[in-house]
Image (cartoon, rainbow, N blue to C red; front, top):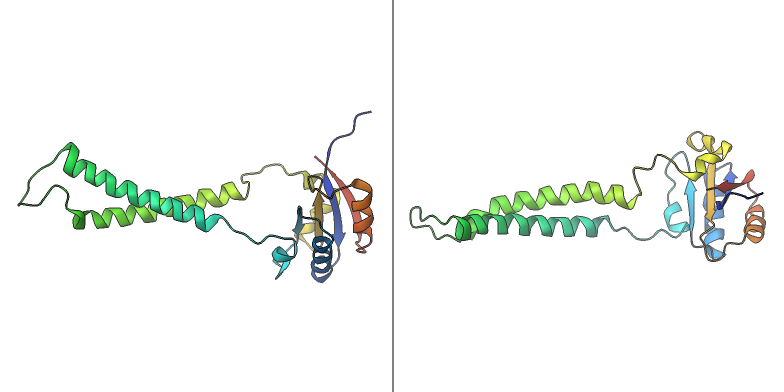
Amino acid sequence: MKRDPIYGIMAEFASAQALLDAAKRTHEAGYQKMDAYSPFPIEGLAEEIGFHHDEVPLVVLIGGIIGGLTGYLMQYWMSAVDYPLNIGGKPPHSWPAFIVITFEMTILFAGVSAVLGMLALNGLPMPYHPVFNVPRFALASKDRFFLIVFSSDPKYDPASTRGFLESLAPRSISEVPS
């Protein structure tokens, strides 16, 4: 009989403070790949599960730089290379006239890259997630708090991870199939 691969082990907690304490102890125990789910934001939970970085500002900066360069070079190409016209003695490469479009293209590309970068970095759209295979996970949007240790964690061992999570006094523990 072939078993489905395990996505991780999930523990259910009754309160936000219990989840916060469990996340802290799990991170201190050396687990690196974990996630937490709650019905509302919990102050400090992201830091406790080891999430300290955010790539969205870098994506927005790169998008803005690409947008600014695209706007400027597009205008330069049209005015000075492709179709140069001498109107009123204005030189073909008149950079002050290019500022408005360059600024607008910077804002446009930065905004679009912010939305697309946020979606890509969050792994969205995601119509299916393995945690929905756990029946009790439906309570995550009501009044329960969940902590999952992923099977891809270097320290993950099914028996020892389950034993560690049981030591945190959760309401229940579930294996999450992939």
